[in-house]
Image (tube, rainbow, N blue to C red; front, side):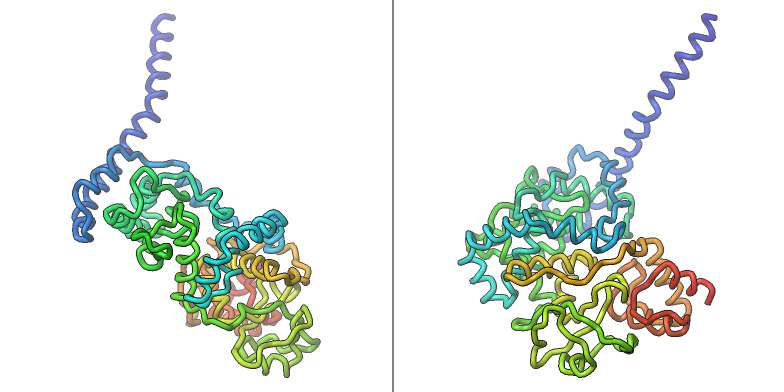
Length: 394
């Protein structure tokens, strides 16, 4: 009996020690990884003191790895996403912040040509106008993702960029907080975006997107302008489609869309010039939109159409316009795994695909239309499970 109890105690102790040993091993592996990163950091101008201070005592963050499975923009119907994000509180707070920072927003709009309502909408959606920008240690999050090789070398490069930011003293190590994926400050810039697009709009010598509102607003404006925003052009419009419309057509000037019977859902007029792309974010059974290159600039901020339409819809409401009118169907978008599978299958069958990481751009939607015609489906450019199944059998 004594031997049995002794054996049981030994086994229990060994089992209890396993998580601790696993943690120690993971931490040792991460330290080795970070040590190997030093030569690259040094080449980027990072001092040894900055490097050591940044990585000292870092352990892997298991929660960060779990959060890589989360995709709020893709795991539910777009209509649900819009309803949960484009709220009365978001709009009311947005109007107050727009009034408070009116002078700065006007200056940002003059310099970058980006509608101030778009800037306010992004600010609100990203961090609730700066009320919460994430509580994660950015260096720890990026080190965890880089070591796990989540999305290849992407986060390795972001970690090196974050070290550069610390070296340039735009923020101190203890205040470099952000999201689980390393998005920082009120505009939620990843480190490489900070280095390229963050601006010192206040003129105090630092690019502070954590606590300096003029820098925050100016940086969002600069980001969008550098990603193709053109002044004086709308992001786009919700539209209605005539009966017997040829859904294979996706690109035309606004004048051509009008001639084809496409109309603004709110009854307004299209611009006299400019081109627009027709797309159906949840299929032809849901709302349709004709969007410009400025919508694509918004989408560069976050590649989800659900997010981009929320930004655009919020900006419209801040301008005093109505919300979207069409009824959103209860259609859950393809998850990332299925989008990637679709892209790889299309690429293997000779259809041009710009990326195979699950990002659906307008070029891909055009190729989807071609295949939808082949499959006898309505060519609305919206991929569904049925489309994927047909593609797998092709």
